[in-house]
Length: 592
Image (cartoon, rainbow, N blue to C red):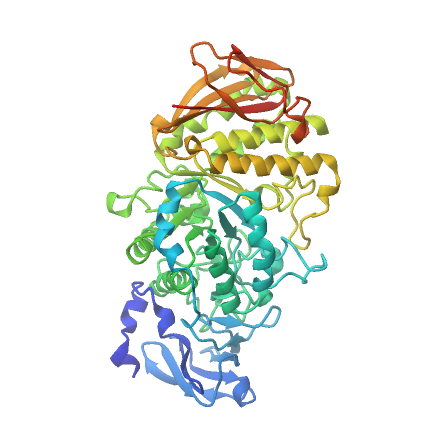
């Protein structure tokens, strides 16, 4: 049966992107399933499952490394594992590498689940989703388990279904139209944030069943919110029940450990490429995910992620293959690279010699900006170029500006603690910096808690501090981030020409001694002017030669946001200059 329907050679050659349709536990009918696994170096493989009291059921070797058995009676929801008899005499029970569901960690059995039967109601969304990236893209990055919890205790997070009830109204109210989830593929350790996985086809059971995850996506789509999922094709968890040494050999991995203590995937192996291609295809096809953010791309571009160690030809080949497959099968899906390198052609099509991504996180911008903000006001004069340098290379790729989880987790400080100065100056500077970010070309991403004025770093074992609204400073800060989101969402000059050089012009780039930066964003019928004062002294920006009819959209120094300037005392169209409080920013607009 196997050889008549499937060609295992394509899987071994790294050309199969739908391996999940034949490997793993495949439901045949209400009482029957076929189980297949690829373990070419195993001496013998048996199925063990709760359907027969965890007794061994020998699996038949079909040749070419595939083992198979048919089981009846067995039902959807039944737990199972593969018992791998290795050639060195050891015996290991493994979860199914292509399982569609599993037990909640720390338990690790696979669960038989049926594909493709969920009644999605997002047809209208799916038809238009590709065009949405031409408009404003405001992404809320989040960790599903620590965003909000029933009681605030670790392990008491909302299910996928409950999360929809809380999350969707919040995103709509705050002005986000995309949500990016840290990896939701199954993983054993909470502390890995999902970046060391064991179940590449299995939504984590921490928050419920696969169909509940589909329901969350379906409801997000019906409310006009896109879904981005983190994908980790560089490394995986070392746990013995997972992918590591699956058939007694390094079937998927390279020798040794990664920089994270995990195992590096070996992209030179066809089975590894087919496995990962199939995983990406599965999330896009089965769950209607709108975009994939590929983690740690530098490790696929360079050996061990380091340019000085030379290019990783196998990793580059895989990236091009992945992006080409996605574009061929899901042309409206966006592929996003987390890539801190200057590798040329990241967002150039594969057909033109590029890697084929649609967007690239601009990590140089976030690194330079946050380090500059941490400097004293005097030192900033010397390093003023750090805040303007991003536009020197911006149009080389299609960039996305990200203030991600990496900036506030893992021994990093909260966003409000990053700038130099007194607490009042920190608040003022972060408001100005956020305005700068949202006026700067590029799609936007901010990690959960950044919008609340979170005062402590993110910790995966704690929910966000939802009591911050009790304090006036953080209450008005949340109002500011809401208003900034709305300004971005509804003013085309801030997004219409993101990737076009006629959408941006410098007004002030060289006022280092004053700490002033000013630039213009342009659309067909609108202009927006952003003026920033990063010094600890009031400054002014002349409007001579810039015409009239300007109106203030937002001033970070308004009292309604925690500043000292009355929101009622606005700049008047006849004024010759705009006055800037210390550590503040202003956005003005005019119609054309």
